[in-house]
Figure 1 (cartoon, one colour):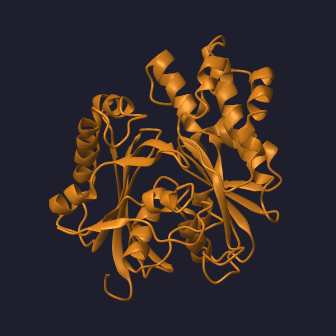
Figure 2 (cartoon, helix red, strand yellow; figure 1 turned 135 degrees about the horizontal axis):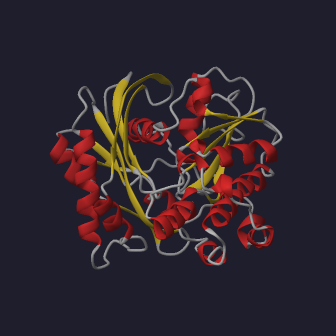
Length: 364
């Protein structure tokens, strides 16, 4: 437990797109977001990126996973150590494997190690309890999205779209009093987003990502590949549902015969179309889709979404939020909820059998 009342929490996030580590401070009482604080970003070096990429698919006891954990811990310690004034830390770790209903979920990196390095209590391993209770373990930001909807003064249903390695949607009705109330939130992964595009850029051009969608803008999407993609069984499953980064690795093979530009255009169209398909599951229509994550910087992606969606499509900056830091802020917020014994996920966000508070706390 922590003190009652507002707490300055520090959160960190390293996504499957492998850009780097985001860190951010949030003042919260575990219910409302009261203030956003300082942020920082530490880009992975090419060597760190490749070391982590080599760990994708590894589970807790697999050979080589300890070396990956050390890279993740060192990178996080470097950026988290820049902050003053935090009372608790939320550490997501780096997802290497995700198989709800099977082997479980694996985010590498030890919160116990970071607690000793930082001299602060660290909340970590947010997803395991949810998966053990029959949930998908993802996405975990929806309860924070609900708090953000309250923070911006929304008074009607809206949706948050995170375009990271995988895309995920949160439908929010802020007229409810709490995120775990029935009908307050619905969340699920939409499909691949930046991950296959980044992999294409790295493999073919030695670049980390398609900056601004510049390469995709020069190409033409392959309609046959797009139609084949939409026939995947995942799109016929009802939410909540989630994906592993490489669940659609067949896409890399599908675009192998295309030019660089056409391949980038096809993968970008795939990501946007998956979001539009996901929106068909919204309980009621929304007037705004607020986009966060690296994909919102891809102009082709945003233009495609605007064409496909029946609502206004905006980067979250349009409502005063920080799209680069929203997930890091989410884990700061969730850390406080864990420490207060409040739920972090529920049946409508991860499919877990009952609302549950995930995460374990390590103290220095």
